[in-house]
Image (tube, rainbow over all chains, first blue to last red; front, side, top):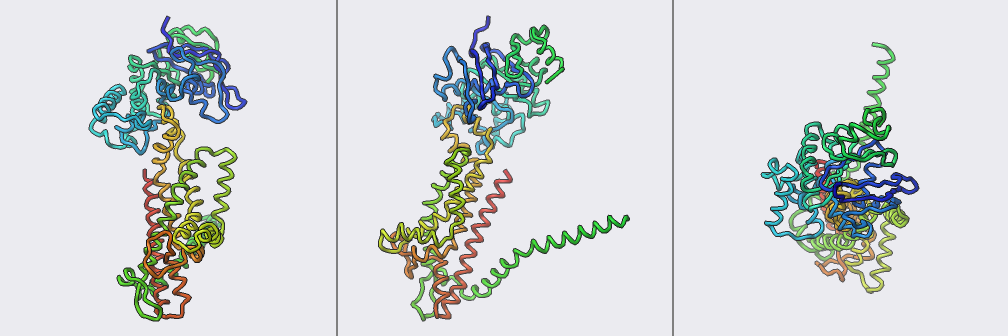
Length: 252
Length: 280
């Protein structure tokens, strides 16, 4: 059995009166890529937004049940501590438009008022960009605005920005859906490599993508976790008929 | 060609012509004002006019340096009061859109924007002039600040609301506290727009006369002190134009020209900034 980094127990999520997650129990295995797939509106994004407590940002939103990160209940942890341990990459690449590439990578430190020595900052920028497979392309343009990069490069910059603060868990919300196929392919390659240093949970509505990048796959439908297991098993021998129907494109 | 189509084409042409002509109508008064000011004002406008103090009544020559400096002092005082307050209030309105208090603040700002400036002048008289027992630049600055405030609040709000939610969330997701996220991500992203709003609000009050009449009052001598009465270009125009001296009438025209050039420059600066914002 794999070691677990994050565990939910009976997780329910609400927006006002609307129940979006109906009691999810899932163990996210450490240093693996876990894909969360399902049709639109099934609660995939809400699920990962619970993991870094972004869900509670929405007025009227709340959760029930437990989420344990490294065994600790995240609601009892400091919000900032949770977000440091759990990074997030969004659907649309969103580097900070007023900052250079360099400052974007360091944003997690700079924006929080953490002072870094020059050599240390330099090292973090280089390491993070290397981890995000962007270093070679931008090493001579570090002080240009991040918004000058192509969409795929911007997304990798956002990945570097998230990695720079050394999260244990990296959440990715359909990270390739706004990218062209070639850029998407590069990000997928990157995701497979990231698991050496960080656990990845990637939301996707693209079945093929889950098949390519994920070690484990969760299938969510109407706010319920229908099935969760090693990707190869889930894809070849789904236990639930709904999983099979989704995989074969009968709905979603 | 089909007769119906020809008719429609003609209708289209007539309508286009009509709309174009009507669109030019607002330009006519502006063009006339500028022409009139240029013709009447340019003869008295020279370096001496800009750099010397008024001569005693009846004596030819002299300038409006006291009023130019005074207007600068008044605008600086008003900005010092209204810009930080207005921006902070605008941030509040954009961050907490759907609560009761923001709705009230928003409505108050809109009402304030519609309040006649003379009423605001009376307010500043009661608040600042009466307790101090004399007219002062500070009282004028307070009056102008109250007029600037709603403009800055609303433009700041409108600009900051346009900053994508994604950007805010990605800062928060990095573990950045909300207040730092607002100051370091949201505000800089909307900075150009906020600055545009500030410039427009300054341009709006630069020509205000009524609220200055019984606050800043006017002063024929050069003054930089906030506690003393101070002159301003609109006050000079008002006082000179209603005086019995022909030379002062000419100077009032020249002062008007100076004032309108200042206002146009502020507007152009705001436009250029706004264009840069769109370009990014």
